[in-house]
Image (tube, rainbow, N blue to C red; front, side):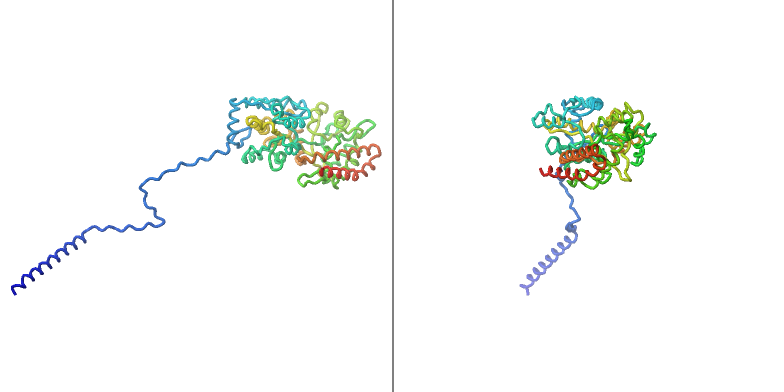
Length: 489
């Protein structure tokens, strides 16, 4: 018994020690702070960023266009052109351009006044303008072919029908090449639709419009009883009253050529050449009827011995005819002789409306201007300024009788038609006109039509009205054939 007691005591003591240690550990665990488990971030939760990110500076897009006031209009232009304009306005850049026209002396005088106004506003640009240039189109071609960029025209103006020939030959510059879409869009809004489209060729803008011209009926109010006939039947009554060849008075004066008689062709639905369809209609039913009407209903009241410009204009100026079919280019001369005149559309024929050819005066930039960027930009600036300036347009209208095509100028004209009755009359007469074709093919149409018309006049004078009317179809068939053969060549 004595040997086993110590062992028991030791075992009990060891057990007690283990119980005490276990208790201490348990108490320590229960009293310790609990560390929460961090949840896993979901896609919608962004963990906090303690380090600031590296910041990328914003990308600055290059400026594509800037607004600029040219003339009296605000348009968007390329930045480099904007800077050029600013420099020539300050005189920091100096450049000279040549401007050519082929106009009458009184027109040259007014154009020169506009040129000087431009130079005053943009002293960095000197414009060499000497007035009318003889045989202008061929002179421009020759200069460009010879590479004479200093003495050839850099800017010139004429009716829009030169566009096709000059563009296809590489003699004029496409403005679409240098002006962005925004500029073209702004320009489109500035001009009448017919005028803007006249400068567009093969979907590119070549010319900027500034005036329209065409023929209308001009009457001496002292001979018509103060009336301006709106129907052919009314005009016919006036012609009958005045036709008396023994006294050398006639019912109507009218220069006769393919251009001037075109309203009668269109009144019956005819045409010479349709460039949209590339179709020739010289012998179309409408053309045949139009020429027959001229011979049977108009010629009997006219002096047909000389149907040229000078003879017919003199008849009207001298008071030997109550009315004349002519254009605004003759108005200054007419006003020197005829005190009271009125202008209006060529009268309707049984409800059918004659549509004369219209020519839209454009400003073009020639290939010679491209040799130097400053000269090119100066040329474009002058063309923009000339066509976008209401003050210049009004001066050209008031002092030279030019008919405006800028929308704001047309609005002014309509609001003040009583002040400008002659210009308003031409504007009304040309509102529904037929723009001359721009295609180079039209040059091959005029000749054969002129030959056919000349033959009709000869037959009329030598054999009489019936023979002349009977010859129309055959002569126009021959003209049509010649034109089609010329197109093949």
